[in-house]
Length: 68
Image (cartoon, rainbow, N blue to C red; front, side, top):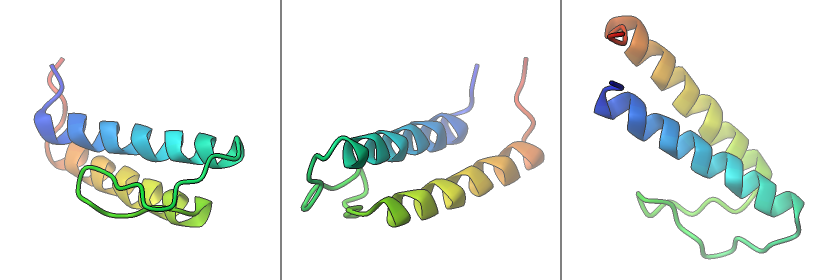
């Protein structure tokens, strides 16, 4: 079973990836907030958030290897 921190990071990464898909489909994201209340309106911001969360996930899983 995935630990809660890994699960939350993966969910946030998926959320940011969906935002990028919405941007590419022409949907406006102005004023939308994620679970932490952070507004992400540009592809650049979403990509930056993904990179940061993927780094955090990697560091977390290196320190706390997933149990199989």
